[in-house]
Amino acid sequence: MLGFTKKELALMKKLNTPAKVQDFLNSLKFNFEEKGESLKSPILTLRTRRAHCFEGALLGAYLLSLQGFTPYLMHLKATKEDFDHIVVPFKIGKYWGALSKTNHAVLRYREPIYKNIRELAMSYFHEYFLNNGEKTLRQYSALLNLNTLKKSASSADENWAISQKDLWFIDKKLDKIKHYDIVPKSFIKKLRKADRIEIKAGKIVEFKKY
Image (cartoon, rainbow, N blue to C red; front, top):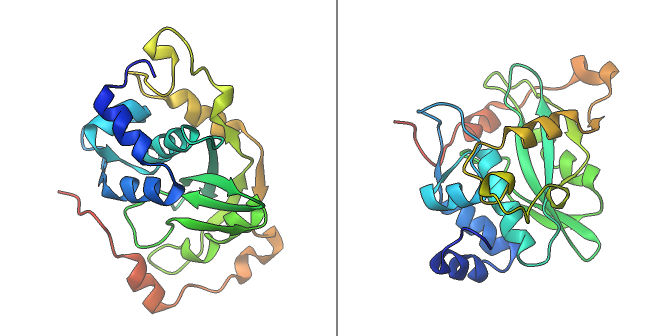
């Protein structure tokens, strides 16, 4: 627990279920990166109270790890016209759910009702589209276990949970990890576009950019 204050530890201890962690992530303002791209560690996100999807995922995974969950990340990869997304899969009993920090009305929390990671990833497919309705989700990654990274190093910069530096090395690991296709290449051109009402709902945001 090197680096966290007693007040921070007390707060994190209260977040003892995935639902409570998700509620806390939702309470954080969205990081629009006005001062440049960032990938803050959990401790810095906790202190700034701002997060984009990746920073929220890192904090969420760390908070779950304190409750005995394996801190996993899963990369949802879109076409080059859209943005990728990072979620935090967790398993309760035989079933998988996911935490998700997003500014939109979609791509959010998933209840632990999915039999496997593919089912979980597929639950995001129909919500993933551009303003013209084009569906863009193409791949999901194998799980990245953050426990395989240094977390007990003496230096804060070597510990992903309390690092004072941006965690771009985790981004690189997710890029290199094995990915699986969601849509057969032969079917991509046959995908039906999202309906107008879906597109309208997809434009709803929780926090507005200044």
